[in-house]
Image (cartoon, rainbow, N blue to C red; front, side):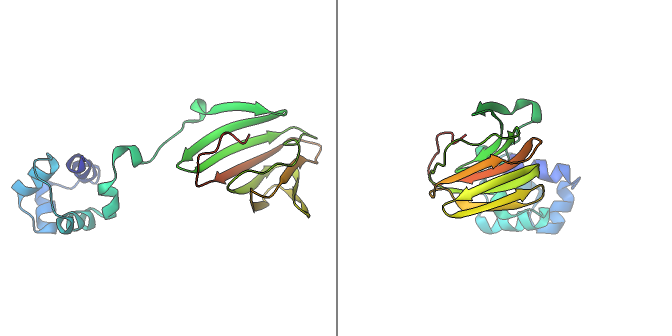
Length: 179
């Protein structure tokens, strides 16, 4: 783990000197230097003191780099299409995926289908018909809905203009692309 480098980066970003950190934590300059250079492994109690002084949660200091925030830039998004839909794969983390789907007028996801997981939808533009089992609703820009995806569901653009839907899908297992 590279805890020391993370502590130094936070301290520098907040423009805190080692002397200020010593005063605020009660730790010696040599000890803090050894921590920041990864020459010593502080106890959880000491890390908690450092985290509190720096104003960050203790778990943040313990995260490995691969678990830190992931950024997908607009021009780097993976794009695909399905049944005439334009899909932008925005980001994913573990079993959670988020995508933006553009439905030209009259397009659908195809036949009602089901898969493992939960879905949440936010209508950004247009008018959508959402059906699941016996439930049917028309939702418009600003409306949202969610459902258990293991129940067959169907979505269609019933408006005269394109519809854009932000969709988040969560599953405990890795999903092969649903869309």
